[in-house]
Image (spheres, rainbow, N blue to C red):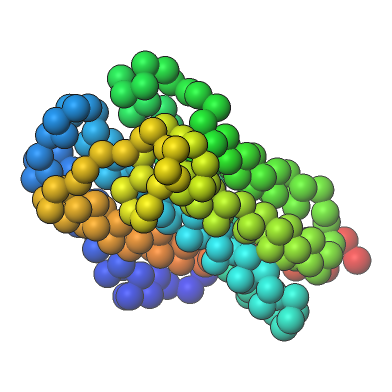
Length: 232
């Protein structure tokens, strides 16, 4: 395996520092929300993980398109990395949302439009790995993954837009909610600052983890090539 690039090492350090700074802004710098109290502080991590999760799914869809055009296996590796890291972050998003919902809505889960589409999106990408694992031929697996990631990527904008289009209790803090929406809370300047710090920190962490996963994917491809040679 090639030595770890200096840029990746720097990115790893920035990720650790960024998450530490985001934690300070969420737990100390941001004021306590008047209605929900301290549980609202989960929001900053909830939004940060949701952001990178949804962006990663879109990145995977774009990578799938590029692979179908170029047939370059590097884009399949990029796509797999994006899906894997985003699926992890999106699962964390759902868990944090449930922690927030318990004191705010008096329930761990409700079939609100946003929660429902988020759960469906997570299941779509869990199925992605299960279905890929059943295909042994690399090019066929990559082609299937590309098409699946492209179609699955449609769930990301749907999940993002649903609370802006339908009646929901999920807060809308960026953009405009449906006229019938019940959720929402006003954010002060300090809250907005904390949110953007969290978005930046999780974006750096996402890129770092993606890079690590891409490098691991390169090793997996070499091992698979060796197995194919031995079996011939």
